[in-house]
Length: 433
Ligand SMILES: Nc1ncnc2c1ncn2[C@@H]1O[C@H](COP(=O)(O)OP(=O)(O)O)[C@@H](O)[C@H]1O
Ligand SMILES: N[C@@H](CC(=O)OP(=O)(O)O)C(=O)O
Image (cartoon, rainbow, N blue to C red; front, side, top):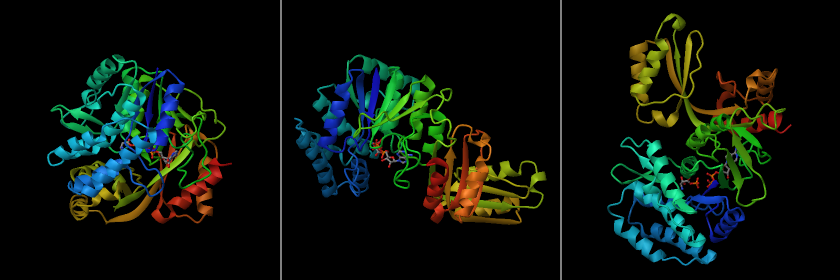
């Protein structure tokens, strides 16, 4: 049995929904499908979920609601589906004053799943009755699996809206953005599927973001951990939390292209399986902008037991999470998301100054982090020399290097303006060859 998830790009129009239907009917093992809200149809278009978040800011902007309704009306017309859209929008209109943000933004998936269920003539299985969050907004996994399994297996087929579930009070709760991937992974795990197919608009996981590196190639197989490292660092094709349910149950994930259904895509499997590209140490490259470095310098820092722990606890008190923390004898660099400093920059610096009495303390913004990922890359003789040689030859100033103990990735920090260039240079020199 296969559980499929189709992302916003696969569900953005009537013609895309036709492709989705053909894919599902081509293999009877594809019994359950999770759909996202309609995504972008072309560059510059708006995702329905983005429109809903916009509407949430001003609930009575009639033009936004009308735009959303029109998106669905076009889908229904182009796919030739019979569906009472006016009724659904009347219900939304009636709850506009009282409904929560989560409720409102989840309507994108809810409506798309209802429409697609009508199109497939499969039952609509309500995610709010199967996916549960606690009062701290954490997923209640065992309960979710129990209810999903019962509800799904009670039907031969089913269409499930992605992105949302409900809390203990029965109110709608949503995952972080991109969360339909998680809904799909939970469904696959609940019914112990043989595979979780995640359908999108690229031929698989590519060696780099195709917007930055047009010549990036699909990866045949990748381990769960490699993928996690890439998606954490911004490779946006699979929500990072979607890996865990499948990984823990040993369910392979197959990332595929709705527009090229004959392409096998990327298989995401356990670490124990060999990658077919074993001759090639790098699996992929990903990166993110928007980091700041908190630089703390103090003579003899290395002899002061607890200095690092103290610094990090001050960050925690201000709600700042740290990503990397390279240190040397008298210097500690703490890489944090710049957004975390928005409301506490001054107070944080004052606390660090008062409690650590550093010789020098400052924050540098505008840093981008790039992860070069591949099982065992660190053990490849000459890898580091080649990597840093390439970057140096391109005249790029490396601000930070962090080599974790996982032996799976090297993180380098560069100025944001060098971000795209660095990814291209590394890809060209180490992956495309
Ligand atoms: N390494 C990568 N491999 C593949 N796609 C990537 C990578 N990095 C970023 N992407 C982007 O992820 C997109 C697919 O994710 P997403 O937009 O969430 O699709 P969907 O709406 O189908 O879920 C691709 O169109 C591509 O631009
Ligand atoms: N529609 C939601 C959830 C989601 O997963 O969408 P997509 O599959 O298009 O990334 C979002 O935009 O965040």
